[in-house]
Every structure is written in C-alpha cells, then in structure tokens.
Length: 341
Image 1 (cartoon, one colour):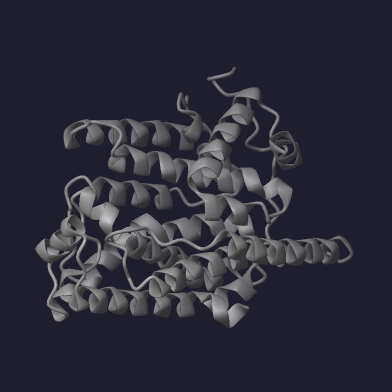
Image 2 (image 1 turned 90 degrees about the horizontal axis):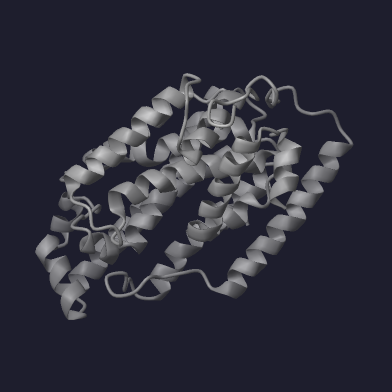
C-alpha cells in the first residue's frame, strides 16, 4: 500500500520515498484515529498527510516523551536542532532528518505557508517551560500554534470548493477541537508530565486547582467538583466542534469522508468520557472497536461514492491540483459529529 501511495503521488526520489514511509509508520503507530481517517483520502494525497503528522509527532515526542530521560535544556537543544533542519529544508537545503525531508517536500508540493510550521515549533517550545494556563484566552493563544495551524496546513492537501480563505477558520477550529478533546482525555497523563492544560480560571470556578487534581490522580479518589470542572471543559470543546462543522461542506468532496470520519471519532471520545463519568484522571477513555469499525466502514462507503462521482465529472476548479514534479529534485541526502451523522 505504501508504494501505491507514493507512486500515485509522483514521489520517485528514493530518499524521499523512505522519508515518507518513515512518516507513515509514525502515523500508523501513534495516531490510530488519525491514521484510520487518512486511509479514506485519495491515495495520492495520503503521503502528504503522513508527513504532516510525522513532523508534529516527532516534535511532540522531543518535548513530551516520558520514555526519554532528558532535562528541559536537552529537549530544548533537540527541538532547536529540529527547527534549524526544518528551516534549511524549507529553503531547499540539505535535510538529514527523514521527517523534515518529507515535510519540506510536502510544503513545496502543496504550497503550505511556512509560518504555520514556525508557529507550531513556538508552541512546542513553550511546553518546555509553561506548565499551566491561567485563562482560556491564554490556552487559545497556545492552541493556535499547536492545533489551529495543523488544520491550516491540511487545507491545501484536502482541497476546497470555496476560496481557501473562506474555509480556513473552520479548519483551524477543527484542529483546536481535536486538541481540546485530547486535553480532556489526557488530563491524568499531562499531570504526570507536570502540566495542566485546563484553564485555571475554569477550574477555580468549580473549586478545583492543580493540587486537587494531583490528589485525585494519586489517591484514585473522585470528587463532584472535579467532575463538574471536566464537564465544563467538555462543553467548551463541543462548542468548538459546532464552529468547525460547517467547514466540512467546504472541502473537496473526495476529502470529506476522511475529515467527517475523524470528526465523528474524535467527538466519540467526548461521548466515551461522559459515559465513563469523567474518570479521565484515572483511566483513558476510548471509542470502542465496534464503533470505530462502523464509523470507518461508513466512511469507506462514502469515500468510494465520492471518488466514483469525481471520476465521472470534471474536477472542481476551486480545488487546487498540486504540481507533483516541481519539487521532485535530487536531494543532497540522496543526491460536531452528531450534526453530520
């Protein structure tokens, strides 16, 4: 399947092919929901999405991995090295990191704004020293670089049936909705890393603070006030999904099943959290396998129908067709889910 994706995308450089394979492996290993949704994209667009995910995952692991015994200074140095490699790669220079090599190629092929990557790195760097967020506004500033720009990076790959500027706000909102879902699901794990992403003012409204969360995490005991705070953050997250849902109809029809599937599955995580009584400090909520399979099958049927329609009609002039050859040069290294159901 990997070779078929690469062939369809017109990626012929051996080093690039290996780099994209590496990113695909990262996506398959760590981004189960994301990877499932990616399989619903037209085959030629999948490598680019793997590259975006691979880079985001690689940077996040530098900052967050609990299995790597590095202090903040060492992590900062590694992140700085990644950023330098990225800046060289985006300018057409030598890349040694396969993740950066694939990302730079994707950015060129799809004309992705380089500033999005700089904003992402800036948010990752803040994770090295920022351990909480006093207000929702503070958290939103962080999430622009860590999540909204992911949606903006994806947009040129997905294609649109409206001017890209019109679809951008919804794409950014969807990236934020996905990340807020992860924040709620991972409250306990983030505490283990010394971070609290839930805004302090929201927690305080319900009589909760970091120490209270730590008490619950360590003791295994629960409290009504913590449940209410978590429920309030869930409400904020669902509101962002409602902001994002209108953007699905703005996408190229052949891309919609992918994003619709991700929308439903990530929203399903919120449903699982609610069903589990907001026990996220003690265990991770997840969408059941039968539910994932059912949503995935529905997405596959929709994807097949959209591709059949696309084959029998002219491609929308609003959807951009990337030039798969202009970036293929010898490289120095090698020479709101219910609403849409």
